[in-house]
Structures are given as C-alpha cells and as structure tokens.
Length: 125
Image 1 (tube, rainbow, N blue to C red):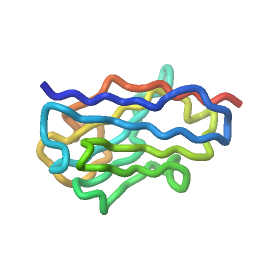
Image 2 (cartoon, rainbow, N blue to C red; image 1 turned 90 degrees about the vertical axis):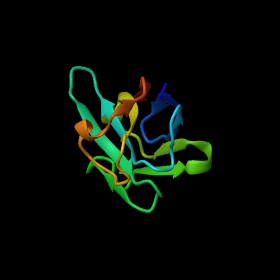
Image 3 (cartoon, rainbow, N blue to C red; image 1 turned 180 degrees about the vertical axis):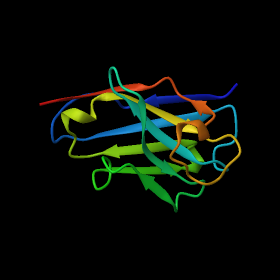
C-alpha cells in the first residue's frame, strides 16, 4: 500500500518560515517525480512546486518563485518544501504527490497518481 505522509505544517506569522516534509512508503521513491500542491478554503487545488527523480530539475508556481524551495532526499524517501517569507495568502492545506511512472517533474494535478492527506499551513498577518 502506497502512503504519502506530510508533516511540518502549522501556524506562523507573516514573514516566517516553515519546512514541510513528505515521506513515501510502499513503493520506490527515487525513480519518480514528486510535487507539492495546495488548496485554500473554497478554492481549487493549485500547483506549488515539482522536482524530478534526481532532484536536478525543479519547477515552481509564480507565487512560490524566490520564496519556496523543493528538494528531495532519495535515501530517506522524503521530499521537502522549504517556505520562506510566508504571506497570509499562502494559508492552505499542502499536499505532496508522486507520479506513478514518470521521472520528469510535472505541474498538472492529473499527472500525479499518489497523494498524501495534506498538512495545514496557516499564516497570520
């Protein structure tokens, strides 16, 4: 059974930082691309960042560029999202996701096959 478990969310003041982690179990990790998405209350789930299998290719939403960094540790089956200079509009549930067969990073939700349950990030003003 494939499981993706996010952690690291919480309440932070604007301008602060958080590091999200997502641990994958039940299948290979190093062979597949990973992504982070987020969903704010009443809104669609949006792409945040993605990373290819080796970690040398990354993509970011415009809202994340310059503030967020995605990385991965294949030995630990873990993908990270370092979030700096957080803003109230970053408040959302953050989800990690894994592609089932592809090594390349992707930005579309339907290109990911396995999802975590999400972790809440709340940024106060």
